[in-house]
Length: 65
Image (cartoon, helix red, strand yellow):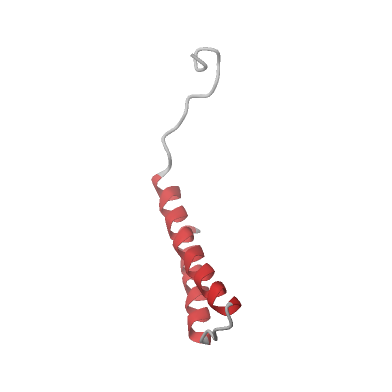
């Protein structure tokens, strides 16, 4: 009914956007787990932190082209 009144027609979700959201969410979960470990007094290897940075860089590279 709103469409008849001039409202924009809803568009289906962009599949690429959904893929990006899934990947960013997965990265966020990993970062959160590391933060919980650090806040609990556990040491985290620099290689784990570097892996998160590398994953973020890869996401940006892949989705910005």
